Length: 284
Image 1 (cartoon, helix red, strand yellow):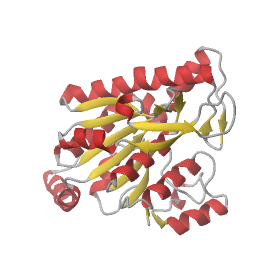
Image 2 (tube, one colour):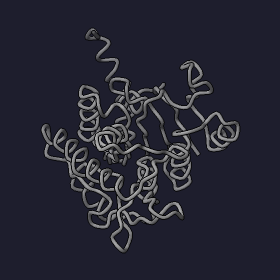
Image 3 (cartoon, helix red, strand yellow):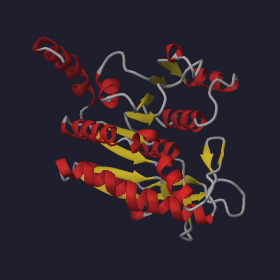
């Protein structure tokens, strides 16, 4: 427990960051195993609410991989991945959309609105928020990519102090639904909004030279450093789309991208409001 002096010190350290980022947009991607931990989920929601209350404009993009996998297993469908991205046939696409849009999105909206009527749940289909197309030239694989983002809709909500909560599905002009990697959606939205920060909450401490050794965490790096780590096969698997979306966002004038461990209590606040941060920060 912090004593009174320590509490004051925490507030003093946070104040310059609150002043610096007030009025700025921060896009947060939430997913991974933390979504199945109710305690951590509530803490993340409270952190997002805190950001809003101090004047920051959060946009929450979510996936739901572990929960999708649970439902697929219940239906005897084996999850398949390629380079960290889910392979999505038509039957899997139906489950993905039902879980992401119908359950996870509304659960998150409900949690935020228990404390403040400020959350609006969306998928890429709502208001044509995201226009998508097929990522791979393969029949019966409905993995998508982001073609465009309707920033007018997002700015309308943000200017009225709502927190958009966005499920990572969208459709093309013909109405075909696509499953899009949530990191990719978050990066595209951050780029379109020219956000101050893109923050990816993950199941790892960040980028590490050795994934089995937390002491090898890379706290600060730039785009060139990230490319070198990819070329050396230090960044592999599910970290690849995370790095790619961070690089794309930074090239679109997002100020910084962060990959942090969502399993740590108040990870968002520690990354934004302390000098040291807790994960990997990438800058252009």
